[in-house]
Length: 503
Ligand code: NAD
Image (cartoon, rainbow, N blue to C red; front, side):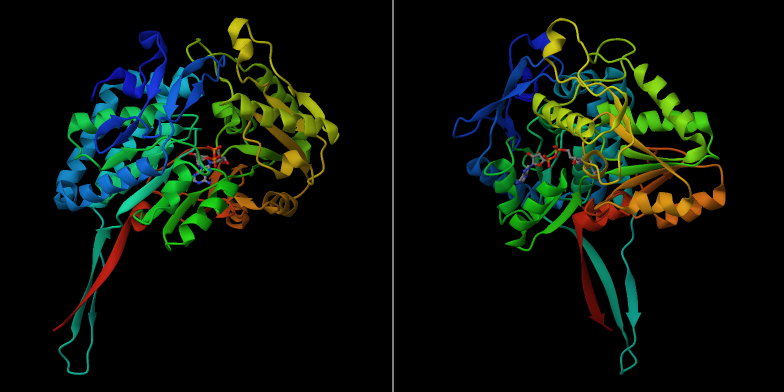
């Protein structure tokens, strides 16, 4: 089974036939017992790519049983060194099959090949190595405790895996965001059950082949495909055998999941939505600010949780900034993944296209000045059926407008002028979300001052999306619960036990 191309989806050209995305449970690719499946369509032209098995209660039960058996079996007995070495092999095998991973992710998301090759796939592989190394090097605490008899007591901590971890993922950077959780969870000795997004079944399935190829014991890594409510997602969050849920996705989905996990009092780690501000001061390096803002608005067709859909620009450079961003946005090349020079792909699905276009319509109805875009680009041939939208910039709306308050998750932004620093901070913080901010200024004191006042989990100064995986990553307010990255991931995926020895 390990190299069965029909299991994980080979590139469309090679497969010619439709793909079949199967569950990966206990080391084997399997269909749903109930025979249910759903379609996966291409974001670029809406053609049918294949069928995805829809998991139900029997598949979740089987995956939990396999994961528990793995924890009690060879996986649970493995030393940290052995586990870390195996995770390095996982990363190396992803790199060896780089082309397959790039092809699977491109087919699922439709995003430019260059982005897959330079960022999403290599970073996805690196997550296994980085967390293996972190886990090996973290000490536990100990205390000498005085006692009345003078002999004292030694308190020390043991760090143990939490158990079976449910990993629920979104579609916007499928492999990267999934391994960001699976890497540390496995490094800490847990077994995982991944529920990939229904939009992006490819790379999670392919990773099953990798796990088998390098000898990860069966049951450690499981994939159950399916939808959210009344499907694999909900059944996973409700299962009593699952010790904790780590989830990345929309805030309202997080709210539904927390209700389901409350029954068994299970731990959650949430990376949720955002409505992030870019703050551009008149003293910034103008070209760098335009370059960085282009990325923070349009990368991945705006489908990045850390993206800046709200820009606040200091009045003296407002007109110049709007004109420069418009010129650059209009120079973006929209097209399919493989085409040379393309830097804007389609949205993930027709459903998401409808959502983004509804915001384009709302902006117009609420009286926005449409600086550029606002509709669907003309695409040639079959591409006309894909989920394309134009890169879009608005100005002139009050802070109460829907496109300023709600997360759109598309290639668009609204730009508002501001007159002083306090004004900019107030508007940046006037949101229920708190994920990220990008500040552009050459005044060092101002940069630190503003960074300390914006209510977000991560602030970039004169950059955006620059990540050191050892740093704490997560959202404030309704953008998340907990932090991931470096030792912070370790905190979630392990439990500390105290042992007290009376001397
Ligand atoms: P989503 O919430 O619709 O879906 C995410 C996953 O949850 C999918 O696998 C889905 O099937 C599953 N799901 C849906 N309902 C469920 C339920 N009731 N129980 C269990 N599982 C359920 O999100 P999406 O549209 O896939 O992703 C986009 C969202 O993700 C945006 O809001 C974006 O900001 C957010 N996001 C956040 C981060 C971050 O780090 N904070 C990173 C990437 C994406």
